[in-house]
Image 1 (spheres, helix red, strand yellow):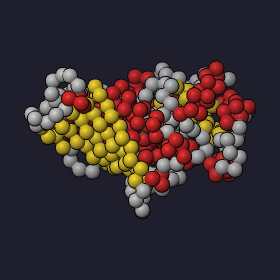
Image 2 (cartoon, helix red, strand yellow; image 1 turned 135 degrees about the horizontal axis):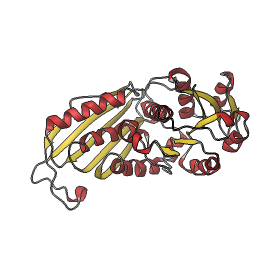
Image 3 (cartoon, one colour; image 1 turned 135 degrees about the vertical axis):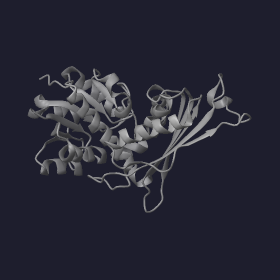
Image 4 (cartoon, rainbow, N blue to C red; image 1 turned 60 degrees about the horizontal axis):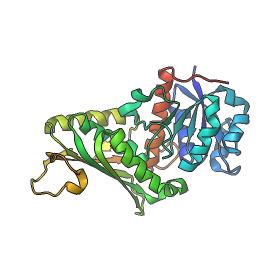
Length: 312
């Protein structure tokens, strides 16, 4: 029996997630689409597909007859909205999968740490840049200590909607923190670039790790294994070239990056691209695709571990 879900946020991310639930999931079933604009395309599409809808936000969701059957609620709104939404939903015992940078619950990157948080009631999907790059940082840190890791996420300007633009500060702060908490780096830094190029470019990410030691071949093998794991639920996730592991020159100034401590031995560079599956959004919107793919994977794994129970 499949678990019914509700999606809060009827914009691009919510609509893409809805199509993934419908087309890809054997464990989840659409129950309701929730928005705040009665004329939104996402709500109209959900109605045409026969799903319950409301334009009254989470308050409206609580009034829908189908709510008693909902086991998981995805929140694809904004960081500020999720704080209010989580407060409204908390008494009802549903699992929340948060696609905003609110980070009320623990950060989850499915390929890295989902098992550690299988008892959480509200899990946070970090950011699109985090979902793409943190697995690579974790791949290096499971081989050797990583005093510093930096990621640059470049996405098409056209794929960055009002919610993404409003959350730029939260994006960098949340991703930087998750590089440390989930990726295992002692210090993390995140940068996002909105590229206005036409035609729009697909998402590209650069990951730089300063590694304390380890064998270069072991580091490369760990990155390759992690890439394979992520690509199981994000088919458009690709390594653009061979992982570069270069010695750190003795005279390279690193104090502002690593602070006190022994100098790292290797500079590890990983170059990625993420092409969207085009279930709802164009293929260049890999930044949105990896978020919805990761959220879907997380919810399915929680269901598989029998973590989802409906409390009417």
